[in-house]
Amino acid sequence: MPGPVRTCAGCGRKAPKAELVRFVAPEGALAPGPREAGRGVYTCRRLACFERAADRRAFARTLRRTVKVDPALAALYTGDTDG
Image 1 (cartoon, one colour):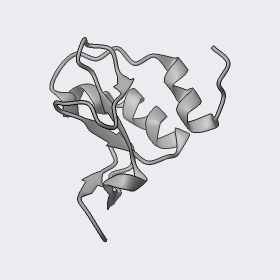
Image 2: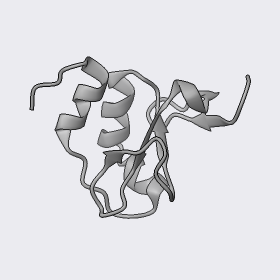
Image 3: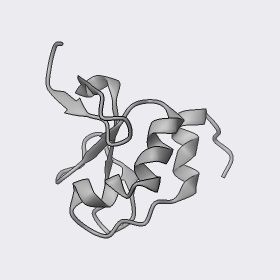
Image 4: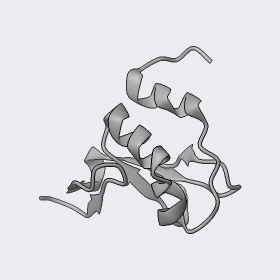
């Protein structure tokens, strides 16, 4: 696997960083942050992984803080751009 390897917070699969979606929560609200500074958490590019990570509080656990997960972030996985 070329480049850095990261683990999906939803399914636990290890994959090259470029294949995953990175999130950060600098103000306590989860947001996509491919190049943001600070601690990040990754998921596969599948909606099921995002939902599983949210349900199991994996974002908060990995980021080591209370995190508000906006359901609208699911649009990153489905391609919806409305709203």
